[in-house]
Image (cartoon, rainbow over all chains, first blue to last red):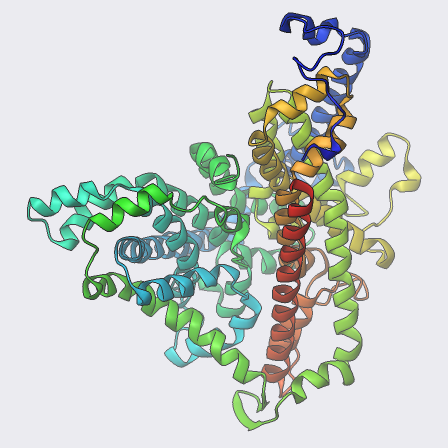
Length: 308
Length: 329
């Protein structure tokens, strides 16, 4: 590790003198860059930070602003503020372009698949964390291996599987698939949490005569609430945004979710720009709301296990 | 698609149970296996039917010839051979593959180095750190399909705000139909993908930087090492493990890229196949080709893609572990 370091002389090794630590105050070192240089560097990094902040957010802001402007304004001035905000584009997207239907479908599909996945994974994770034996470790390994799931490999067989159940174009079929593909991640996170709970709690509950299910439901499940929140947020986002499964599994418009709805909508409303922008905003809004409610969980989850 | 997402992969690094806890757990009686299996049953049934069964059948699908949806006869590897000998696959598969590799290279150069750059800057100054992290991560939360469509509107040659802005500042020569020109369209895909993903390396590198020992950096600073010197001599080598993780994940995601290319170039990778990628070739073959052997051919594409991603990720990971040991001792 020390190979790449510039040589440092350590206190107590001789050298000019063993100076008291105060002398090593950085501002007193002669070879420090001057204050002026540091000021320039700080200004440059600030500028870089703000410029990239604009690059990251301005396109999203334009999406919102242009959804409130009339097509006529968009054609003459692609960039501009909605001086007289106009909400008819939302009305057109919501009613004429069936976004209300897509929106409801997305809510139904996302909420029910996340609920099912979380419920079955919670049960499985508790058992995997608390039971022992070779079977348990094999089952766990199989679940976890699903983290590397190849979607393209599975989609054709899933299509014909649902077809044989009569579940093509049905929201139920989509819910089942989403719930199943959510299991590896949910089981993984929840098992890790259950393992961190001390066994004494169950010992006490057992002495009080609680059976395994009672113990799970009244003692253990409430204790992993933070992990449940993480799992719910982190499955909600990709399922809400997912486009691949419904593109293939849903064949009739009444059951389209928002992302597939968007693809047909972009074909049909090509020239109606403000409605297109409004459609994009409608598809994004729930995530922005979720983000505002759960910023902490999202940032913590994205970086979980990364620090020390 | 519901890819496992960065989340799963980073969560995979969560520290294992500490030995002390494990010992304590063995003292309490474990859950009886019969009861445990009852708890596992619902998840196992769901996972078995909708994940394991389809995965197993995909392998057999690729080894049969098909007429529509009826499985005809065992043909061994003929479906795979066909990908390299018969048109349109012989030309579209390698071209799409090249585009995927280019997307990977572009993502490594643009998205991951921009992410690392800002992670280091934000690590050195605490002011507004969370604020910038949130702003930079916003595009990452938006659906990739929405991102693709949004940029197709922004880059429109007629009414697009991007070209309008370029003209407004006198750069008329740069106000081009970027997305409609075959030579630039793929770069648009790369940059739009990078725009969406920057927050991901930013947060991962930021968290890793927070976990590094401060003493080395401080010692070097006392010795008068400049910011860039400290970065290349100390910080970068210490970051090798996380750089490895980010690179492997970037590889997986760019090889499987689907919604952004679909939104920007449609399922045919327009203009003129310039934005065609492997997932689109697979999608067209399976669901739009009308070929009677669509199932056999598309399953072969999917299996090759999976083997390639899985194999190379494993090799990458091994290689990074070795390098890591060499650097960090």
